[in-house]
Length: 342
View 1 (tube, rainbow, N blue to C red):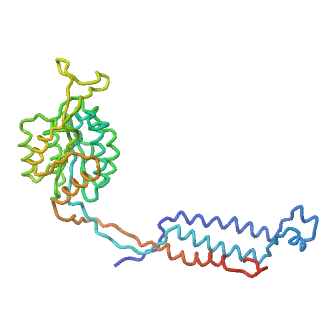
View 2 (tube, rainbow, N blue to C red):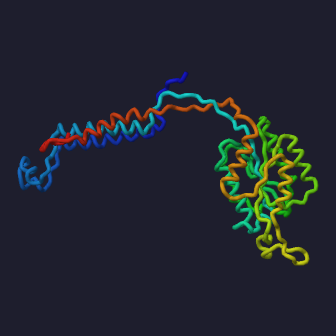
């Protein structure tokens, strides 16, 4: 049963009621000591309305207007303060699926075959994934030769969005692309949850890997219930690999030949098949992100209830709107000629 505890959601608005005090003081002062201007020297008081076309209000009219507008102000302030007095406790649910994003930040991800670069496009894919997500807890690891945890598995997607602009190839001191080390780190993140949730990994890469035991390691993860999905970044035509900042424009082999990198779709498809997941080339639209989210969230049943409860208060400010409208509408009624407004 809901409890009934009257309070205001924004009580600081009640301080606005103090604004009535100076208005009341001015009204009392003007009644006791009516002001006189230079025009009062040229005609008697009862003749001034005929000369100026403006009639000074008498005491009763002043108090009537102050009462009307004061009441309207009080109702408005109370409505803004947010009166509420009952609530319901809603049981919170924990997402039933966890996803770790592995973003390749090796030097080959700076190739500009998909402008402005593969890495920039990968960041865009992660951003779309986070913004479209409604059901998953997401973590993120950036890797080259060494994996770096950008964000642990969390429901706070904003932390990933905040860190995303800083994810670049400059984070990797040693070049190379060691996916096995990144998979092991992702397994640690997923295993530390211990909640029985569905566990998935999304690899965003161009497939520039050379690790003989990679396929077998992914099969082992699949046997443990960790599914691997892959988004391929780049084109099969590829392009030259830029060098580090401060070095030559392009990376070269020992003989001076420019190093080029191409999207290795064959390897990525093979890895996704070994991991029991899905491979697709990134199209940089919402479609591919929605597809990954649907696959990752659809591998287990419903969200699991937690011990936490969320209290939802029933706002009652709208109860004050009807008398406010009645007071305002009364100012717009038709009046007979010569009739003054109160």
